[in-house]
Amino acid sequence: MAGNWELFSHDADMGIRGIGPTFENAFEQAGLALTGVLIDPSQIEAKIPVNISCSDQKIDTLFYDWINELIYEMAHQHLIFGRFEVKISQDRQGQINLQGKAWGETIDLNRHPLAVEIKGATFTELKAEQNENNEYVVQCIVDV
Image (cartoon, rainbow, N blue to C red; front, side):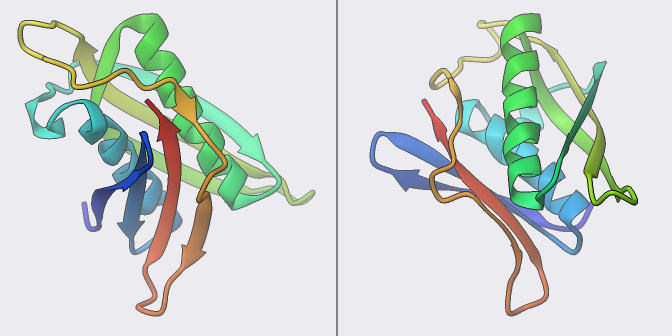
């Protein structure tokens, strides 16, 4: 998978950013960044698949929805994810639809010493755009 992810600090919270050759890849990379707030994503075994669907009128708020759906699944199913797949399409009415999948495993605090708890994505520094290098970049601040 091409692309990369990174974290950036923001006051008491944490910024996540995904960068890739497509918005789909950037969303996937941002999923890794979300996990990276908690633990090194490479330590997660991709054993349990979870389907995630969301839709919105704008790509930036679709990204916000994607991150919050991941946080919801992590909290309610006690999972942590290390692999992501995203497909984005647009219907005739202009609605942008995301069909995604996240793979992970049940959180085991002996194996996964989590750094913080993520409460949710925020609209702070929310972006979904193509940069000057023709890379797609998605980002937001998550409340920790």
